[in-house]
Length: 372
Image (cartoon, rainbow, N blue to C red):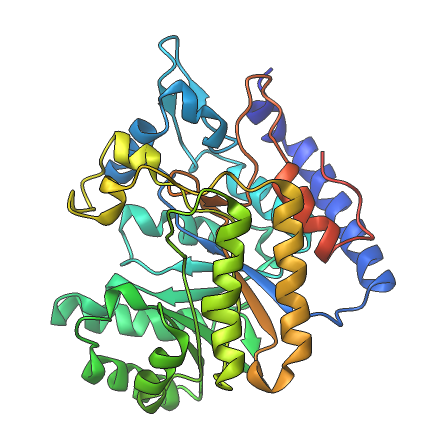
């Protein structure tokens, strides 16, 4: 019996849910939530369709197999097959995240019906969703045609009213906005319409702009209604993860604190787009800088991930006035072929590699049982 088949049995899923409830309860008693909350970005390219076929191709070379999702399978030719929509996969992902102590997932928002929205829809439909909260990252839906945007705006308002949506700073829904979509020409009128619709529904979200230069970003975007700044990822050609993490601290954390800029610290777990350089994907231009990059940061060790996460939490505690949301965002839960992930990965033995997530558990849920 394969590992995936085993976890999909009703008996196993029941035991997993009960174990997680016990672990969570014990952890809450031994370690009350006196730390900032921690979320992880979800980029759900793994649930079928054209995008999944692309990432199957980027990660099929043997040298990248260690970066495959834990639920991937290999055929006789070592070609990867990925289906995150299989029954039980979302439930196991929820269990993994909750046991590690993650507080929420931040889903990149794509239009309803898009293959890239499948992960969010699976989460919302899961009977286990209460084990981890969620929030949204405004992405390409805000730039769609007018008739589609009208439907998406209404959907966005409804999603913020869903049970388990993360609230911060006195009950305000937490919303991130991915700056890559907005840097050239920010859709001010649509954003204003969205804020008006949310206000009409009785909500005042805490908006966080995910840009590239925190001080400049806040100076430009705060007047539009953004409460703080953060980032999605950090691209670099430094040779080690240690240097990458240092750059994040210097260019984001220290720059923001030095200028008293409201900040939700983002934590990097890596950056290595070599799989996409070897096998280009259709949604990225061949002129992108990484196609001309020969050196990427080394893969983060679990201890390095643990260290940088602890540093981010310490930063929030040291500057509480700059982070009323009292939260941290991690890149990422599942950006496997781009270089940042916490979720378990595939191994030849069939047992998922849990080392990265176990590093997170040591920080966020030290009273919990080690992940296996």
